Image (tube, rainbow, N blue to C red; front, side):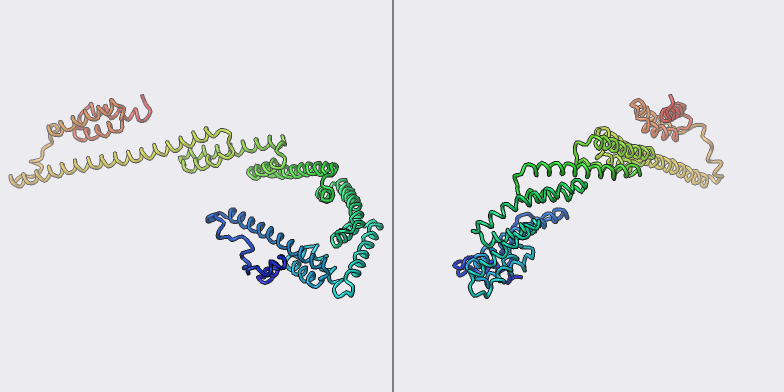
Length: 436
C-alpha cells in the first residue's frame, strides 16, 4: 500500500517536479492525528464523530490525489503514450475500483496500445464509439447512449459533433428520468420517484419543473415517514409503553414539526408519564421511603411543565428526611440521659446499702434495724429535684417540650412525691400526643 501511494503521488506530479520531489511517507499524505489539538476523547460518541471526520478528510485527500493522477494519465493518453496511461489508470482502479473515468481510459489505452498508427487508430476508435452511442440512441436506450457519448467527449474533448449530440441526449435523458419518476410516483413508490427526479436534476440542475417535483415528493415522503412514526407511537401507547410512545412522537415531530395531532398527543403522553411518576413518588413518600420518592420525582422532570412544583416536593422530602434524622438523634440522646440518671440513682442506692451494712456490722444488729423507711426524701434530693424542675419549667415556657420532659423526668426520680413535676409531665404528654 505504501509503495502504491508513493507511485500515485509521483504520477500526479509533472515530470520536472518528479525529479525534485523528496520522498514522503504514506502518513504524510493524510492528517497527522497527533497534531489535531483536540485533546483526549473519552466519550464513545465523540470518538466516533472524530473518526468519521478523519475518514471523510482522508477520502477528500484521496479523491483529490486520484483526480490529479488521472489528469496525468489522460495527458499520457493524449500524447499517444498508451502504455503509461494504462499503468496509471490501473493504479487508480486498484485504489478505487469505482473510478469510472479511469476504467474508460484503461479500456481505451488497451485498445490503442501497440497500434501502428496511433492517431488514425484513435480516430477510428472514437468514431466507432460515436456510432455505438447513436445506435443506442436510435434504439431508445437513452441511458446507455448518453454514457457512451459522454465517453466520446471525454476522450475527444474537441469533438464538436459529439458535444452537440451529448447536449441533445442530456435533454432526452432528463426527460427519461422525469418520465420514469412520474411512473414511480403514480405507483406511490416515492423513494424511487425521488431518486429518478434527482437524476434528472443532476443533468439539468436549473430545471424549475424538476425542482418543483422534488420539493413535492420530499414533502410527501416527510408526511409518510411522520405518519409511520405516529402510528408506531400510537401502538406503543395502546400497549401502555408510554416512554416509547413519547420518543416515537418526538421522532414524528422532528420530521413534521407542525403536525397538530402529534403535538396534542405528545402533550397528553407527557402529562400521563409525569402523573405516573408523581403518584409513585407520593406513595413512596407516604411510606417514608424519601430517597426513592425523590428519585421518582427526578424522573418526572423531563416531562413536566411545572418544574417549580416538582422542586417543592423534592425540597419537602429532603426537609422531612432531615427532621426525622434530627428526631432520631434527639431520642437517642434522651435515652442516653435517662440511662445515665438511672445509673446515678442506682449508684446512690448501692452506696446507701453499703453504708447501712457497715453500720449494722459496727452495731452488731440486723441491716433491717439500721435501714428504716424514710418518712420523706433527703434534703439533698429535694433541692436537686427542685433545681431540675425549675430548669424544665424554663424549657416548657419556651415550648421546648422535649428538654422540659427530660428535666422533669430527672426531678421525679429525685422526688417522686412532687405534684408539680407529675402535673408537668402529664401536660407535656398531652401536648406531644396532640391533645389540648
